[in-house]
Amino acid sequence: MKIIYSDKHAGHDPQTFFVRGVKQRSTEQPERADRLLAAATAAGHAVEAPAAHGMAPAATVHTPEYLDFLQTVARDWAKLPGASAEVVPNVHPARYPATYPRALAGRAGWHQVDLACPIGPHTWEAALAASESAATASDLVLGGAREVYALCRPPGHHAYADMAGGFCFLNNTAIAAQRLRQSHARVAVLDVDVHHGNGTQGIFYERDDVLTVSIHADPDNYYPYFWGHAHETGVGRGTDCNLNLPLPLGSPDAPWLAAGDRALERIRAFAPGALVVALGLDASESDPLQGLKVTGAGFHAMAARIASLGLPTVLVQEGGYLSDDLGRNLAQFLAGFESGRPTA
Image (cartoon, rainbow, N blue to C red; front, side, top):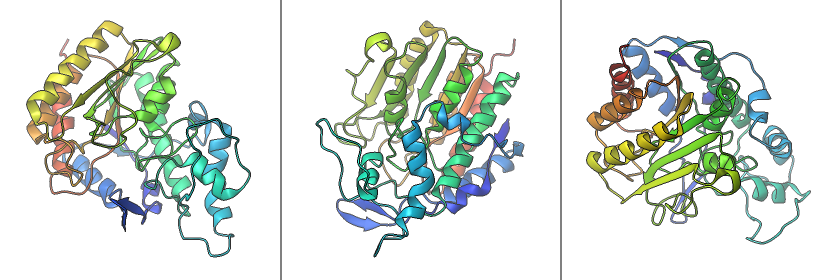
């Protein structure tokens, strides 16, 4: 399988993360991508750099104001007296009608939903390269490749059209889905990350041409809390084009795979021309975030079932944090996907 990867991700090394009010280094570290790349190459997969698409792919799903913010905020923040090394908001608009602010602190609060998405001097370059990786993988699939894996970092599925959150800045999964729409009337997104893909859901929530399905730990007690519940099914033209399959915390392979079967049934009924898999490996039993308890064999089995759909597929890396199993789980998923492809 072809792997699309950019080493520009390493420029984004976030230091700010809060757990129960305690500041610590983010779990979204550059070493994640290093381990994933090593596992992919050790398994014999070919690696290539993304094409230089620039901002055009991101602009298909993100607002101009948001893209301008991401490009310029680190530079402008550094000019503020006494500013921190990373852009971290201290105020957010309430759940009422609000006006877009001019002040930099206000813009940060508007565009950064939580404290898990600090913006450093090279965050924009890393996020842009990740979006180019997703776009390049999509172009290869549009050109006839059966499947391509975009090793994106930072991840993207928590990013809305105008808002970063949960380690995510540009929504690589949504960018891939939108790009596949160039040749396919319908595209499906299947998100298997331990966290709900709320940004992806939000981008496509009122559309009937992109089906979004997410299997994740129950947001009643897990990030992103406010989104990812089973009753969220889409609105307007998008009604019934969003399916959330939340699972109890600590669920092992069997219920995860059963949810996968439900997801695949819905995808078959939707009859898409292509598929995007938001590949979060943080559902692992050994992941430090401890949401679900999926084994390497579980990742292999899920991948084989997804591949059995026989759809042109872009695999987009989302979460999955530092553990001894991180690389092994990726290798298991990629091997499962290749083994599950229909032979005829």
